[in-house]
Structure formats: C-alpha cells, structure tokens
Length: 278
Image 1 (cartoon, rainbow, N blue to C red):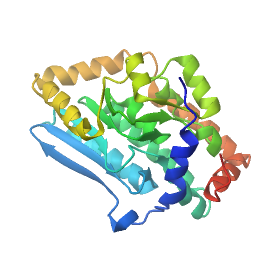
Image 2 (cartoon, one colour):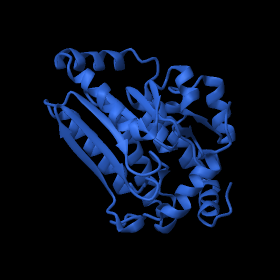
Image 3 (cartoon, rainbow, N blue to C red):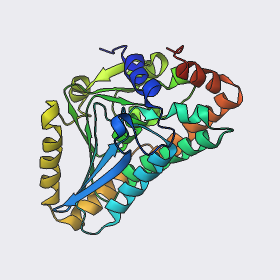
Image 4 (cartoon, rainbow, N blue to C red):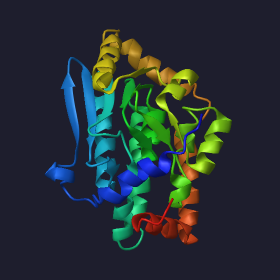
C-alpha cells in the first residue's frame, strides 16, 4: 500500500533544518560527514541535524568520503548510515532560497550527482542502513547502494513534484516496480520498509536499535571474502545493469532546470519555505 506520508516527513525536515551551510545544527551539534574505519569496514555517517537535509557542502563532503573510503585498498565494504531520526531528507531547500542566483541550485544538483555516483561507483559493496524518512536525495543514495537494510520505521519517497523539481526516479525504480514508481512520483506518497522487503529490494527490516549492528554483521560477512573477487564482482554487476544510472539521473536533472527557468521551481520551493506548500 502506498502511503501519503511524504509531505509530513519532508515538511518536518525542510522547514526546520535551515542549515544553509552553517557549521552547527539543532542543539549546537556540528554538521558533518563522519568516517570510521575498522577491520576493513568503512562506516560513512551523515550527520546534518535536525533531519539530514544536506547543503551543497554536505553533498560534496559525502561524495568525497565515499570515494576516499572505496579508494583505500584496505576497505572491503562500506556502510552508509545516518545519525538522528531520519536517513536523509534530501537537499537543503532553504539554502537554495537564501542564496542569490542559481549557485545553490546548481551546486545541489552537482553535489547529488557526485554523491549518488560515488555510492554506485564505489569499488566495494555499499550497504545503506536506513532509518526514519528516506526522501529525495536519500532515495538516490539508497537506490544506488548495493544492499539496503532498514529499520522498522523507515519510509521511502520522492516529494520532488511538490517541490518543483524532478530527479531520483531513476533510483526509486531500483527499489519499487515501475507502475508504483510512477504513482509515487505523481502523488509524492511514500512506501514502507516492509513493502520494499516484500519486493526484495530491502534485504532485511530490523528494530531501530539493531540497525547499525545488522549492517555491520552483513559487512563483516562480505569483508571475510577474498577482496579481489569482491571488487571484481562489484565491477561485473555494475557492468550488467540494464540502466545507466548516471546518464538516466542526469537526464532527469535537465527537467529540474527547465522547471526553474519556467519559474515553477522557485514558486514551489518558496511556498515550501513559507510553510504554504503540500
């Protein structure tokens, strides 16, 4: 069943986040991408409170962190996780509206492209550990991961149409069947982790407190394999993908720029910031 939750979850994220490139978020906690490495497993953690709506800087840092982790010959698996109540609420819309010209819009689009590509191109398997809301750019990250493990409260969706943008349907199509993907894009509704488990696109659904441990256990199982074989397995699997995810996403992004030139993008973003959007 498709749920009409995207507006509530995204609204909780975008209206309150106001990161705008600042160095601290809610409660004064520093905003950052953290990397912890142990026993051949790199854990990359998104931490942009209160809801992990990433500013341009955040997307760039995330892309660099995943790329660097994968480039390390000692890395055998990567866990992509997030601090806080949700995995990722997408881009920082307030940053876009508070920045003169199109610099923030262009930066967000380039940053998302780079981060999604870094996950997909990472030479070792990437396990996404998803809790709470996974919206917009969060779907781009999860959809490009090799494996997704989700907490019981996880929901996935694209509120892009309500925000005057298009994108990440490429990645949503890797998580749900095509007809459902279209319905989710048009309506901005979300689906639950349990529904994705039934599709086979989420490997396991676990209680929230067990999420990181479950991701770690899977990463350790992969890390125990011959790393040369695992790296070639990742390369071979990417090579047989029926859709070029980078080219497909770039095509989608072109329509976001078209909407912006037509004025529809700015109107939707400003309505959201003003608390008047869906």
